[in-house]
Image (cartoon, rainbow over all chains, first blue to last red; front, side, top):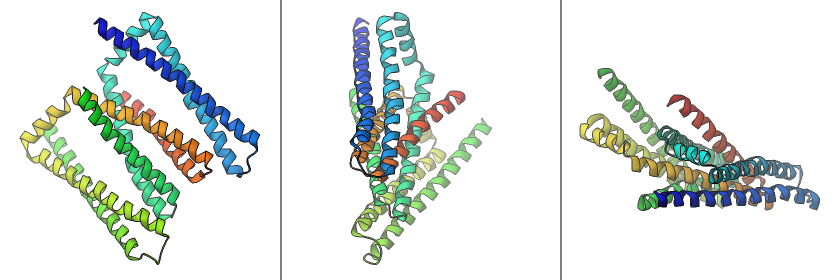
Length: 155
Length: 156
């Protein structure tokens, strides 16, 4: 039981460090768009629009969620109420099932969307889009297969 | 119980029909790829033909072979009592469920990180088509997960 407790605390500490790293990465990405604007690179309006979008994406999807996660893990290490709540959530079978179904079915849907996108991009002779989709497709199934083997051996 | 059996049987038949469609789609895409290869030199660049030569067999393997396996599985589920029992037991195996859950979740998170990195690199190299493709996939994934979670939360 004590060993479990230590493992869990170590896991929390690692997650907290990871969130901090992610937050720093998000800030770097966000600042990079300002650097692009300051450098006055002449690559057309679309290029600057894409950079702006990317910087907001970094702000909303990397910085804020990682700050939220860092706070959550900090609360867990300091307050036993949060820790107990997290434990209960982790052992909640219904929640586990929802998570599994959501990730699995979105993954499978994405795989179909990628196949369709590959076909459409070939029909429209948009080869850059085709190669991107193929790479994502291979990454999706390759990493899934490797992770499954990894967990199968470990658990 | 009879009603339950009927629903199961109807679901299996529907899945089998979908698998047949999947098989046919795979064959059609493979043949299309072959047709493009045969007309080599008349249409498109070498990169275009290379892309088709990858996509044709890929579609065949992923759609036709996978569809065939699925069809065989549904057929056995419908006709073999022993196989059905075995599958149900495997579905209730907690370890297997946990492995599946972890594999999909970790893969999803890895994919999101890879897409973000690809967006950054494509912007740095001014490859805007790649950027928009990754952006669309990123949005699809992010929104898809949230919708799926809510949907299952209200259903389960």
